Image 1 (cartoon, rainbow, N blue to C red):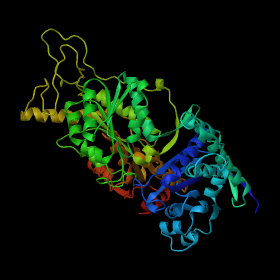
Image 2: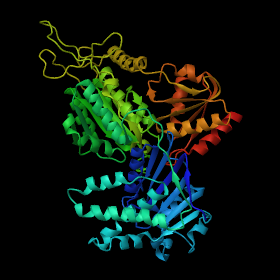
Image 3: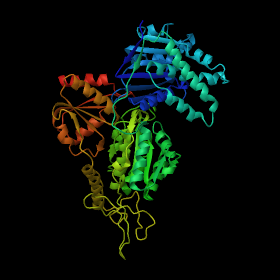
Image 4: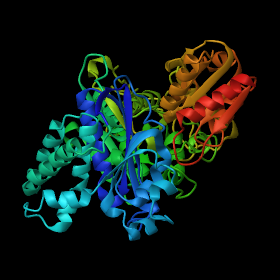
Length: 616
């Protein structure tokens, strides 16, 4: 068979293995290397929910999918061109994601009788059993070859076997013509101080994997994915959680306020707290609290003291923070609450993604307690979303919920590092200056246009005041007067609704009016956009509107929805955003398409649903 080097527009690689096989690192390195090379990319880490499932079982399989392209890439891809399966369980769990033309690379050393039975295979031919025997199967003795490669390294057997992911990465680099200089640099930086003795062995096994792939006949073709044309600038690969942390830091810089983050570690939000903890030099203060309630309460205290305050969590933690969120709303103190959503309810499936906290974010507090809700739509967009959520909180004196998701929090894509000169100043409404003799500061006197109160940081003579969870009047005195309560409730609601004056209108991609408008919010953006573009390419006349601002909605929302005969809302929950839109624009003809499996949409299933709705 003649070997070919094929130029291709894009490829999808899925690395899968046991939790200890290093597939997350392997996928991350492949993605980072491709980002530096200049490819468009999107990644999807797929972690097992169990802390440590029995080795070799399907429940313990860890996966990492990378989609690289010579153009912009907006999803991690539906199905893969190469599946790397380090054991039978990984093959069992992931064979369904292989394209008909896919290659399957396995470590044949793990495909013994014991491994096959642990994975649930009933025969000795797993490929036939899974009906993928027609794929290009690359059965390499990866463990044996790794042992042979490093037999003179001086490393113990266990340490050598931990390097088999580098052998596999070398093979993948050969198949997709990847330059390996980035991986060399990573190994040198990672191990230079504490374990310099493992640098040379890892480089050697990486090279040996590359050379092995180049010399065997089992690989039918290799592929070249050229860099994608991009706007001039400096790029890096960034995860959503990193981008969120950096967006908060940028808001701290633009507001001139120190950043405080009080949080309790929880999957999949912990990475934000970890990232902020690295940046003490930028004035960030972090506190790992003993529980969710302590996390938000310390942040509220920091806000009262004049900080840009944030707390991070996931769905169960947002539930625990609800009472303190009401306190932040009642005191009208700025606070950014980042909820990186995961599958629920209760503990649910902690490592899987969903959009099921929307209703909780909008309504999930006692009393009339309106709080703005915004949602990033991609890993890189988390930077802007965190920045503008902070701006909204500081300038409108309110807590803001930033509703991220596990898919974009852990996923990554190339990000053009912006100039901070392109971002607006953040101007909190501070109460400053010397008050006239005999005049007192009234904490709930409001700007007549925005209804925003002034922020008096403690320590200023004449600005002493009380805030708290009990209802107050404008002067800050506790009041149980029915008419005052009605007035303050209305002012708090109107103040949040007025934020719509400062948020951009929702934009429609494609047709501006007609039969069908597709609507999404949050991390479904890339999948819906890809599906809409495919339908348009096939001759469909549809529009697509994606909402980053959930509450309040953009001011043109009614106009946009009523410009179409039917509105199809696609979301990873049971019609929560569809119900929210129905409550705000009851005249709109809203239908919905939902998925609650702890997994993102597939582009193919969205295309099918959109075409179905066009025909109805």
